[in-house]
Amino acid sequence: MSKRINSIDALRIIAAFFIICIHASYFGKEYVCYFAKCAVPVFFMISGYFFIGSKKESQLRSIKKIFILVVLTNILFIFFKYGFSVFKHTTDEFFTKSFSLDALFNFFVLNESPFGLHLWFLSALLYCMIIAFFLSKIKINKKILIPVICLLLLGDLCLGKYSVVLFGRTFSPLYARNFLFLGLPNFYIGSLFKEVSPDRIKIGNPALVGLIALFTATTAAEKYILAALDMSGVREHYISTTLLSLAVFALAVKNADYDKKGVVSFLANWGRKYSLFIYVFHILVYFVLKVMRSSIGIVNTICNYTEPFIIFAISLLAAVIYYKLKDLVIVKFSKKVN
Image 1 (cartoon, rainbow, N blue to C red):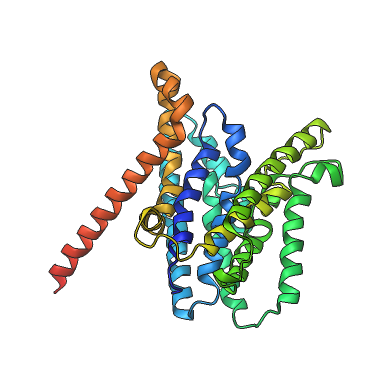
Image 2: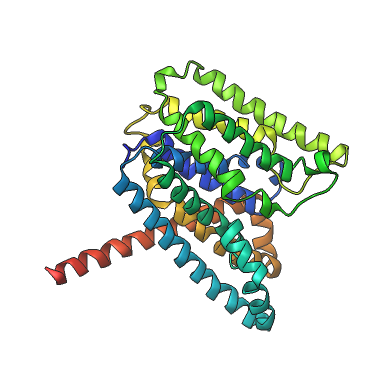
């Protein structure tokens, strides 16, 4: 396993919060999402940074961990979605849609889970890890890797946000939001950063923060220009989203040695332990709040301003409780075995 870096692991928990900001409902969401949309590319970059170049045994453990997570989370959401269909008396529709040939094709080829839409990320990450594991036996020249990364990122834009500009039509977001066009290029961007020591990033922190602000603004500009021209595709991934993600990740890499015992270290511990759990679990919290908002006025009013923070706090608390109980069970089991 590669050496952990607090600034990068702290970025995990920050990215998890912004994933919640993308899914939650609250006033000002549109403006927050100009920045928040970089969270998924950043997650892939972080994963690639730690995975590629690590030992074979470590890579296999990571693949096994994500594979188990893909299986368990989809089983969890099968039961959740089935239970909801029973409540709504739509069980026939649940089975027809969830287990159709189209749904299975989208799941196994394009990473789209029919049980939890956000679970596509875990399947895409698993595919990226498996591909990178087998490609690790081949030394890939940067002169080949960088153009391939650019080509795949271009594929995301062509099939996504700029599809109307280029082809005069939109495509299903499934064709761009998958392991191939979103996962692999950002996964390998993370690996390229691994080869760069922090002191070799010559852009200073103020300049990087300035670039983050600039690319957030240009993301908004792209959105409004495409909307004004009536040429906006279905996805919310822009040219500036990749540039923003690069700037955010570069800032984390550059500050690898910052705050080893302070706030960043504290956030890094949360990021390492809880970020994936929060990513999976937050949708359940969001669903419960959605039901409460529709029936309890005061909850709706509060959530209009604070829902991302409420979802994050509850998801984080659930993660802490889950891992405490898990550790307790493991300790008791170990004592019985010994």
